[in-house]
Amino acid sequence: MKKYLSKIIFALIVVVFIICCCISAPITNAIGTLWSLLPPVVAIGLALITKEVYSSLFIGILTGGIIFAASSGTGFEGMFNAVVKDGMIANIADSYNVGILVFLVVLGTIVVMMNRAGGSRAYGEWAAEHIKSRKGAGIATFLLGALIFVDDYFNCLTVGSVMRPITDKHKISRAKLAYLIDATAAPICIIAPISSWAAAVAGTVDGVNGIQLFVDTIPYNLYALLTIIMVIFIALSDTDFGPMKLHETNAVNGDIFTTKNTAYPPDDKPEHSKGKVIDLILPVLILIFMCVLGMVYTGGLFGGADLITAFSECDASYGLALGSLGALIIVIIYFIARRVLSFTSCMDSIVAGFKQMVPAILILCFAWTLKTMTSMLEAGPYVSGLVESAQAVQILLPLILFVVAIGLSFATGTSWGTFGILIPIVTGVFSADLASTAETGIIPEMVIICISACLAGAVCGDHCSPISDTTIMASTGAQCDHVNHVSTQLPYAFTVAGVCAVGYLISGFIQNVFVVLGISAALMLAVLFTVKALTKKKKA
Image: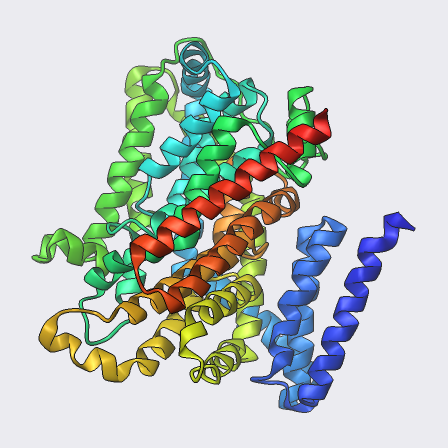
């Protein structure tokens, strides 16, 4: 009975959700209603229960197509058009998405070349001499993630490729590595003023200095700050709970995957022993430099714009694709000049790199299509309407916005789309307060708190969602089974989210950053020390 309990619970949840949908509106009038959230509920639930992500996402997509066809009255033809033409084909043909796919393939190629040149092996040997423990490996992963704050996609894949040999050496599970990567991707980027995320946030608010507003939200971005506290605590104390505990126990005993990991092929073995640490470090530095250069180039840096403006107006997808392709050319020339790889081997690495990224590409394409289904069903406007109805309770608005942002980001898999929907609502609610900002230059504290709550909730939902780009990238970077990553990360993310909810509840009454952040950090540490004590007690 226990074996089927989770499936029974999921079936009951879906049935109850469908009943609620039917009560709220008939399926023939589903667009812009509760029905719009059913496709991601089906996809996410199936993925967590069946442990099979491809079929789960596809079933979620079909669910969205059926609802859209029933609501628009277009029948089977409408369903096929929604799923295939407007969903899969449109997303694969989208220039922004193609830029991300190009970046993925190029990064996979560079990683393969670093492995074949012996750079990864040499770096692993160097790290073995300097990183002596599991704690050291965990902290090193966190620090590298914190240093690469420019873009979350770039962060996930680079940190994963560099740290995998080290965490494997110290018997850290791939699920734990994926969590460390994911927790230092979006949570770091959302508090970094020079990043693609800062640019996205700055562009959502009219009438105020976007970068100034972004900087003001950083101390109130509780999810990002408390996640950093949690990562450092877990790495230093070697404390784990939930499904992660099993993965870590198995890793210590030699099984870093726990479940069969057939999605990702093993890393290529070095072609010879001439590889040095520089053969990993230099390509990574070249990639970082070229990607940053590509991003600011698309933002107009060489056309007269200053650095901050260039970041705020950059096209991250085009910039990453442009920069990574430039880096690939330089890295190929470098390896051939070093005589550690032949030209033929470099060209073969392109095919091998593509193969490395096939699982991530498949999941991303399905996830993008599912997001299109929720967009066609107008899930965003439906949720924004719910938020607008809560305007009367302004003192609870930070908490409400945080919870709603989590739900919307979790269901749609996009944090950028979430705060893009919610932040204009916040500015609309406080339009009278913002009117004086142009004269005084001072943004009202409650506006900053509410926007921070939107950003924190968006990152939290994105962090938890199996269909989030960043979550998929973290699995790819760690070469961890995607469902394993999601299921082990959820208890950690929900723990931080619970403390954040208390913090945002307090912020509605006490609009003081020192009080809110101080109480939230203290509560977070208290929870973590309690968890540590309980896990030790269970061991005893």
